[in-house]
Each structure stands twice: as structure tokens, then as C-alpha cells.
Image (cartoon, rainbow, N blue to C red):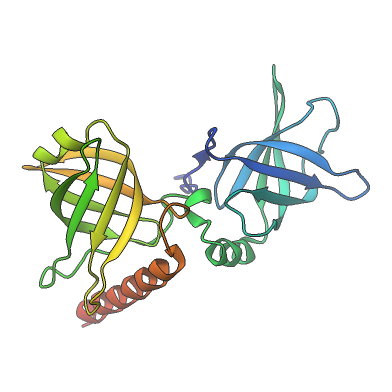
Length: 240
């Protein structure tokens, strides 16, 4: 039987500082070090390692805090496994209130932090392609391109191979584009997550930087509206 694919897990780095506190019934709050996270669950290591233990099968509350959180985010999780490692026990938690977590993540624009691949992507209507200007690199080069797909977490852009000469040394770009029916352009700061040769072009996979983009909430609302409308358009065209 084929195993169901789990949500993409984000490995945390020094730029992603998240504090997590484990609350278990009958126990003192325990500080945990997050190792990775997704919308399915988290892997943590207790700090210090020997301070406490969490029995497998127990239900706990996890309170997340960090620079990217407007307010603490609390979710319920079940301890599903424990792995003994030299650095200390590694605990895997599975979220049990995923619907409520989803709503909280959207409200705080944290979905890209917890899962970078979960959002639905739509391709622009071939009749109305979306042109994109990419800006970046040490010389702040500007390269024209066209949108490959768009979601609330990021986008792909196809541009000429000359762009890679200008952008090879950077992992941050600004993307400027107009959504259909909008006069004002959207300007989004992006992280370059991958780049590859695509026919005669280069394809950039970009993740929106929610903290560096000015008025990201307003941009997100417009993108959500476009993605929803495009999905409905695709469904109508596919209907018999």
C-alpha cells in the first residue's frame, strides 16, 4: 500500500528563531528546541535534554513564539514517537487540531514558515499572461520574465538565461507584476528557493518574504483573490 505523502517539513535555521513551550497536564512547562516543522507536526528536542520526558501517546499543548509571530500561537498535538540520540531525546508531535492551526497560520501569514509547498498553485490564463520584472544582484539588475504559476506562498518565473548571469550570486529578488484587472503593481520581496534550465529559459522558484515585503497582508489578499478566481475559471472550463 502506497504511503500517503506527508507535508513538506521545513528545516529550521539561524534565521528562523522560534521558541516553543510544551504544556503537559500535571507537568511544569518545558522549553523545546524545534528541529523541523510542517502543518502536520513538529520535531523537537527538550532543553536541557534531561529535564523531563514526554510519554508517547500523550496529548500536549505547544505554544509557538518568535519574531514572525504577531502573538503566541497555541496548538494541540499528540506525541507520536521518541528517538534516542546523542544530543538527547527527539520527539515527534502530530497536530490534532489542523483546521484551527490552518486558520491561525493564514491570519498571521505564517503558512510559508510551516509549509512551503502546501498552497495550491495556479497557472495564469494563456490568453492573459502575466509579465514579471525581477530585480536583484549586486548591480540591481532588472530582467523581464513571465509568471509560470502563483500561490499564496510563492511563484515561479521564466526568464532568459542571461538573467542567471546577473542573479547567480544572490538568493533574494524583488518581483514586480500586475494582476489582471489591477492598475497598481504588486512588489514582493522573494527568496530564491530553486533555479533550473527550462527549455531555452531559466525557471526561478520564488518564496514570498512576508517580513521584508511592504504591506504583505494587502498583497496576500489580492493574490488569494486571483488564485480563487483562477481556480473557479479552470473548473468552469473543465465542466462538461
